[in-house]
Amino acid sequence: MTATENKLSGPPIGLLFSPQQLQQMQGYLREVYYEAEARCVVLADITGQLIAQEGNPKEVDTTVLSALAAGNLAATREMARLVGEPARFKLLLHEGDLRTVYLSDVDDELILVIVCPSATPLGLVRLVIREAIAKIQPIVQEARHRPTASAPGVDDEFTALLDSELEALI
Amino acid sequence: MFFNAHLREINLKIVYYGPALSGKTTNLEQLYRRIPVRARSEMVSVKTREDRTIFFDFMELSLGKIKGLTPRFKLYTVPGQVYYAATRKLVLRGVDGIVFVADSQAGRLEDNVASMQDLWENLQEMGYDPYGVPLVLQFNKRDLPDALPVSQLEKALNHRACPTFEAIAIQGVGVSETLKGIISAVMQSVYERLRVVPTPTR
Image (cartoon, rainbow over all chains, first blue to last red; front, side, top):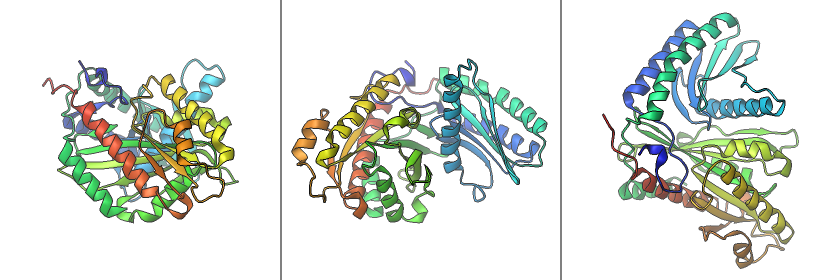
């Protein structure tokens, strides 16, 4: 039985990556960051969860960026379906005066977001994205078919401590 | 849910659902004001010029490490207006828990029921068991003169016997309690689901 086949009726558990897999993907994001001269590179899932990032987190709020990127790509996929486009739009591009944002499908569940100076050539970014996706996809496949990560230690003590943290906070 | 095994972070998605103008965005705005800056992200709202939510509002609540694990809660609202059905579905993807914000006013009962029905259908369409998704109900606008009795709202909306919270979101009343309620339900669900995750194969 895999993590996604559990018999409980709660929402499905997302992909579980091992620390090694996450570090590997982080390395690929770093390559994109330097090769595309990016300001920020983010790997997120289609529900808006941030998985890995590279760049100065103080420059861009990557948590918010992930949520907006996922919404943006999801809306575009729906538009494709609505207008009868059988394939998905693979790359979305928002070109500004200073910054250009690239959104790309990694697979059905993951998206890559790259923020570059607008002067960075599109051809270069396309190439770098293609290479990164080719490296990330096998890791995702492995995680999907063979979850190797330890599940987080959520138990009664954890939830009790969380409750008191929340009580103190709000 | 997304668990980052490298950083030991558990990321959970909570969606505020309900009919138009029931107070979903107001809940998030109040939380934004109450939660200290160190524990939250910026709040973003994708809205129309008329200040109505067109896609979603979003904010992250991040607590410090607890037993070596950092919980991060992503809070979303959906647009309540009927014709934004498609975007509601998109926001629901990957949801771990839902707060249904009902408008207590007598004239809004049908809208509440229709929105609950819409939620049910969307969850089923996504392959979720609507009975299994953590859910709490907030009966909002309790201060208004034509607010229905809680018993009537319970009867119309709470078939699952979920925890309920009375609120006057615009004054911040009941907002924190509702969030704590859904977080508690979500953590219980996570605990139960993770118990059946197999141990690593290598």
